[in-house]
Length: 130
Image (cartoon, rainbow, N blue to C red; front, top):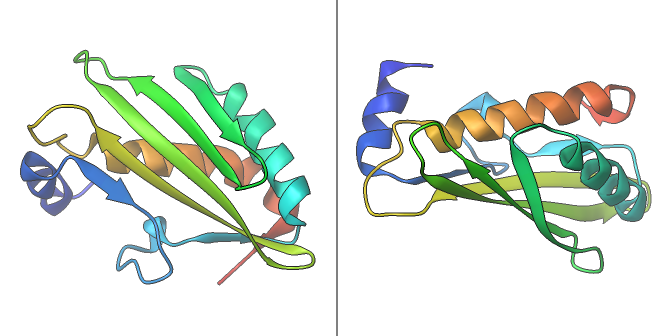
């Protein structure tokens, strides 16, 4: 992780993905799966990741809420959104925020990168490179 990311994390306590993200690691992920199938795969995969607790799922909206406790005792709230972009194509975005007022020293960034690497391995054969 870059020094710039850590310095940004001193004051910022959130991070998220999007199509327009400057960092390629924070770009939206696309998969050749229907929204329903993608949601099932993402949900079942996230439930197996150690250290994370799935709090809430709304399949009709395509949203999964997860919680993670850091080694410093802070709690991170992560929202994973699964959106259908076509009949057999889906997009996955994440937003992670720390509870509390101080920055996160890049913890939210690392959480998103970690979760995307797990999902990319699980859904590798369905991933659309872009």
